[in-house]
Image (cartoon, rainbow, N blue to C red; front, top):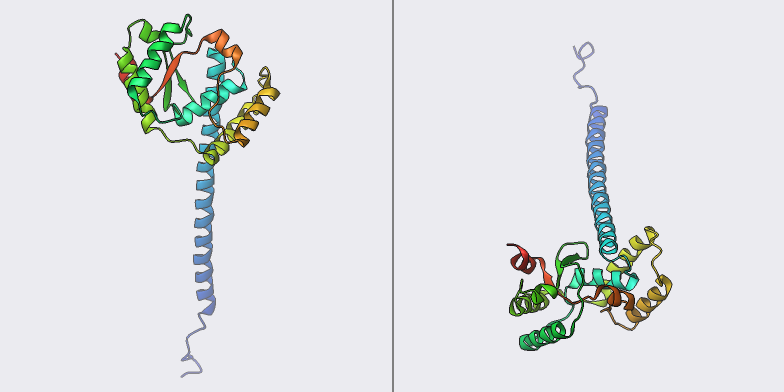
Length: 225
């Protein structure tokens, strides 16, 4: 009986191996698919960031064609850290604003401007205070409130950010005036731990930058009707 109909079942090892191979292949395929998805998403985010930085650079040069590298540096630094320091004395900040307003003879034609590429901070032209569109107290409150809630700048965080921004600036081949001189000055300051920059003389003499930095939230309250 057993000779005609063997009692032992056929060896099912090949089937098990095929099943294990299928599960293993499926698992590997799933991992590869996930990696490809996240890589694609990462590339999209990198491209989006690059486009945002490029847009911010070109926007600044459109508004202020004579801007130099140090002016772009200041723009992006303010875009990341806002005013860049805490303000403990509101009255001193108000008095300084009033003093600057009294001494200023000319103002930029740009009434307000987003800085950086994330849309977190805006420059508010003091001419809006002069023209009684915004009161000195309103702008001082917005300025001090923005400063005291801003991320405090650190050398490590800003160096990484600035090096990326600089690579985008260089990729655009903008032929900025005094570029090498400004680049050397910025590098020297950063090596000495000086993060806050200043406008170039040509920028100050052409555009008369009298403004205060505020967050997007304060900007909306001040400007939105």
